[in-house]
Length: 188
Image (cartoon, rainbow, N blue to C red; front, top):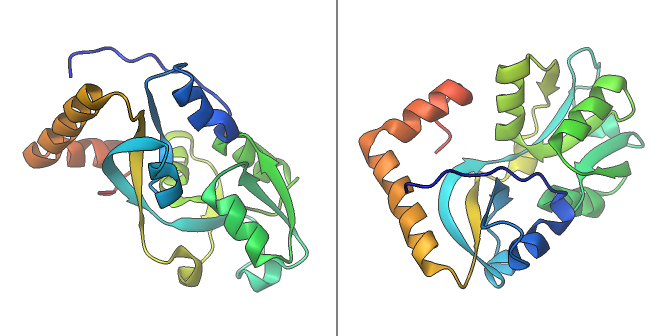
C-alpha cells in the first residue's frame, strides 16, 4: 500500500486498548476473528487460518492431554487459548505476555506444555530450530480459525487499502510464496 511499517511490541492483554488509543494503526499478531472482537475493531483478512495446539518440549514423554492433568500449562494472557484452558480445567495455568516467553518457559522446564496457535510456533521452529513437539490433539483444534489484522473502526480507507493489497497478493501467488518461505506450508 506504499507505506513503511513500524513494529511496536506490546503485551497481548492490552493490545486492543492500545489500538483504540491510537498507539498503533493495526494489530498484525495472530488475532482470532471473534464476534466479541468484531464489536470493537474491524478486521482485514483473514490472512491465515490457525488451529489451537498443545506443544511440549521435544524430550517430553507426554503423548496426550490426559497425561498433562495436574501439570503446569503456559498460555498467553487474554488469548482465546487462555479461556479454553481455564474452561478445560485440571491444570496449573500460568499466563505470559506472548510466544517468546512461552517458549522460554517451556525450554527451561518451568511449564510442561503451552497452548497456542499452531502457525506462530511453526514459524519459530523454522526460524530458530526450537525443539518442541506438537501433541496429537485433533479434538481441541476444532478446525482452523480465521486470523485477521485488527484495525480501528474509524479507519475505512486503511482497511480498504490493506484488504485490496491482501487480495492482490492472494490472486497473484505472492502470498503463497511468502507463506512457504516463512512457515513451510500454505497457511491460507
